[in-house]
Amino acid sequence: MPEERMTEERPNILLIMADQLVPFLTGAYGHPVVQTPNLDRLAAEGVRFDAAYTPYPLCAPARVAFMTGRYASGLGCYDNAALFPADQPTIAHYLTNAGYETVLSGKMHFVGPDQLHGFGRRLTTDVFPANISWVPALADAERLTQGGHAHNYVLPNVGVRPWTKFLSYDEETQFRALEYIRERGRAGPQGPFFLVVSYHHPHDPFHVTRELWDLYEGAPIAIPDFPENLDETYSAMDRWVNEVHGVDQVPLREADHLRALRRAYYGLVTYVDRKVGELLDALEETGQRENTVIVFTSDHGDMLGERGMVQKRCYYEWSVRIPLIFHFPDGRYGGRHVSTPTSLLDLLPTLLDLASVPPERVLPVDGSSLLPLIHGEEAPDRAVFSEYHLEKVKGPSFMVRRGRYKYIYIHEYGVQLFDLETDPGEWQNLAGTGAREVEESLRTLILDKFDPEQLAAAAADSVRRRMIVKEALERNGVHWDFSPQFDATKQYVR
Image (cartoon, helix red, strand yellow):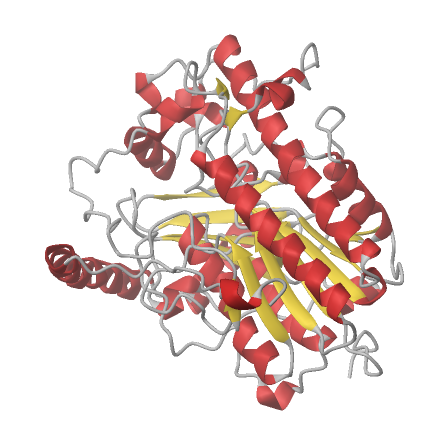
């Protein structure tokens, strides 16, 4: 049994998740301008993972993978309208069975009639629909379904707003989470909790309050540099997502638009950091900090104009890299940086280890515990994978990262190989060059684990089924959106 299992007193677990947060744009990962003092403190006192990846660069499938520790495609989750099967054990199911109080506040993008997936309590509704109303059309051989997301990345669609529904959502998420922490502190000793607090921001739209905008007045805001042959560097997948996002319809590469985009994003990152600080303060004030493991992460990143691209749906570092910080209550391993590649898939086995859940009570998963890496062990051959198959692309694709190399396989459309040690900007595609042995070994890793033809057929079949169900649900007026239950007759003085 790993020494990190706190057998005398199982720890509380607070997992904080942001949406679409690029690790490079936080002080915790070394950014000199973006103000994230609370994340900085967590990283300084905890363990920072410097090569953590999403297993799927899209919201709902990434969260399915996080919850189950399994690849989303293995569960039939290919897009933001794919049902999360209710019979799949999640981290919340396991921790519930282990005696934890399991609570979710905020966004998790569950799609389907089960809106709990093992959580005993859910304190808010979701910000996005639980129905399958966002089923993507199958890609046409000549043209992809348009999305137009790039319009949200340029002026006047970025910048100051008096308020937004998304800020309201995160404020509700925060209020309910703080209320839960404070009430547990007031009630006194009880069993351990697993609390997930999940924010919408800094996901687009990039609308900030005047105070957050002014916070970066006069600050140096770095923007991307574009080579003259930028368009020639695009892979087939890059061209697909640029087309559907409408990149060519907006002045995304112009400096004024990029600076406004980054300034608004900086403000939203600081907004999330302040929420983290309030949670930490609440734990401290209620005497629960000393037995709470804190994890901070995100579901995926955002290109934010890098390479002239927006959103996620690709495998460049800005899209697939995520922040991952573990903070232990006794300061154990404080300041340690782990450079070995890791994944959101690894959170389930890691947290179950920390909660002393016996291995024989856990079904096989695709992730593996991070505790050996936290202890300082080396794992030079450890490989992590990411996948993307359906929404706004013409076929299945995969990424594998092992050591310094990242290999991208776009089935029937091309490959890319990058040496992230010598080329962190991912400009030199080494595929088909002298690194042939590396390329072949990484390709083999992908094809030994995934079957592109089978995935393509299964994804297309899933769309056809869901289109029929979607039409019937809409005709019947049936929806699955979660409505939290609060009994006001028992809340206060009665």
